[in-house]
Length: 418
Image (tube, rainbow, N blue to C red; front, side, top):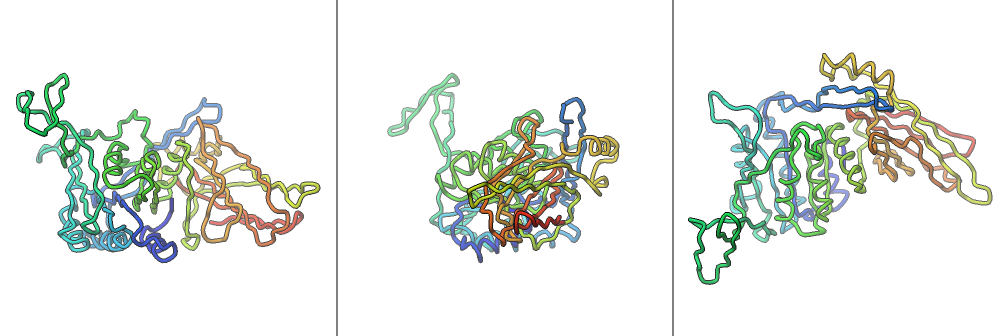
């Protein structure tokens, strides 16, 4: 999981990690050029569960400051990079809607080749609202292209009922019968009826434009085998990563939104899945929170190791009010003052921080509302070049990083990176 600009991250994978030609499936759900802003609903409870704060928070916008040309230029640059990552048997699935799909298809014909077009999937769903001056818009489009003609494809089968629900008895054709009548099994068609994530669904993260796991459960096995690598460079709430993990695939995800990465990490942690969160520390982002962390060290008698104890003591939120819906600001301020630690989504520790890429060895997220606030680890007692970094992420996706440089038992230098 990576937080940062996806173009820079893809270049990093190509140039530093030798990932060219190694990814079997790329699924992306980029902004749709909808010219709309999207919110996430954040729910916070006090530690005793007696008080509750529910606020609407700005998640991201799909309002391009320039125009369609700027949007397409952004996407085209990234599609060119993604093609470099695709394996010879790989496919790319680009999820769009009516706003830009017709333009993007022309670009993809150029980048991947018209002959490598595989499918145009129509995802049909039920949702609120209806049109008065047009037919109700209740579908998205997924464009599927391959890198070569050798692409892997193993689609699901679906029932196709016989006319009149009666047996055909064609030679060599297997027929089946259920309560409705006789049918054959055929390759799944390109119009998919899959429900959106419901308001009461256990999948629901509260992140805007979250896609259902059922959608990815069709895509992933159709395009990959167990152990293959899947990637999503506009990961949002982390649906691809969650489903890929459950289906025995390796995965890579990236998003430029701290809120998206926070939602994804929590989702994966709640599922009990191991995860590494990477971030380019040269990308200086504003931090709207400040964590108070305690570091304690204790020599182990007769050992060349020491016990390091890290405690999460307090948390302060600053400069975030303008991103919260006006009517919710008062209850937010009260909650932030009375139970600030409840705003922590998760925290993690890199015990050998190189000053650039954060690679956590321990991650602590909430379990049934409770968050572990103390961790301990045995480390070599004399390691003057070692830095320990604690990253704290709140429910809004904001983060703060505290670093302690391991010098001697008597000397500690702590700084807060913002």
